[in-house]
Length: 112
Length: 251
Image 1 (cartoon, each protein chain N blue to C red):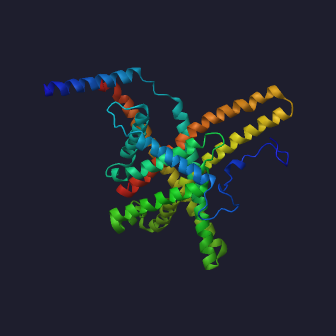
Image 2: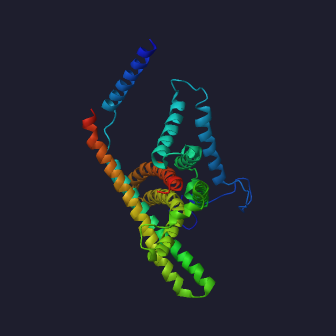
Image 3: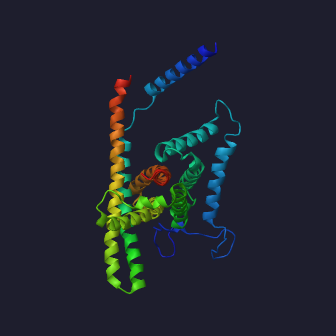
């Protein structure tokens, strides 16, 4: 009785999942473009923040050592590199996510 | 509603901090409109999650299912992004997400105030995440957490330079984390006010039917703002998860 009950529940769960999938809204394509805009916006802010922090650190070091343009120039460039690094990491994460969703889409028909 | 200088467009007036109980100065402990709306957010989230689920019904009521939806959404995000061993920090991330989402959405009510449009609010939120994540990293890995900044796959001569770059890119996190949320809310609400001012200007100039144009823009921007309000809360929480993941697993 107990065993039958749990199997019945599992079956019911599978049926509910199938029905949800069949009747649910199709995955929208529009969200993709918006997510892309969000990603671009994120990258721009990361880049600007990197240069800004590099500028701040360089300026502070220069006021400490009285070597005005030296560290400023150095750290702005390092900050730019840091910004690019964050940007590239974001891009790599996005690429991985795209590959994963693509793989999931490919798997889906075989799983049935 | 033209003001004394005759202009209709005052996009930044809505962000003014005003003391609610008299006085002109904002001290360390002054109840302002920002405080009020943050309190309303906390009260709304508490009402949703505590009162909403008080019945603990097997078949949830409407309020309970909204609370469960919120809980499940954040839980799945923490599981997927922050990875193993991150569940201990779920309450913190849930609180952050609920607070930011609440502030953003309640800020969409006309005449209300959006605390998250102020960097004075978003910077402490981001700094709290930054400091706690760094502390977690050092507690979990000890001094070994410094290895996070020491690239091992580069030639030895380049490593110190790359380490500086890594440290700067680590410091970029709280800046971009707070800047993104604050700037998005600020810009969207200001744009909304600009179009509202244009509407009033067109009417005042006696070009009645043309007012349809700014009106349509206002409707569009309002819809977009609801989307942005949610997406920015989501991005804030998911980036917290990403940072937490780095602290827990070091890549």
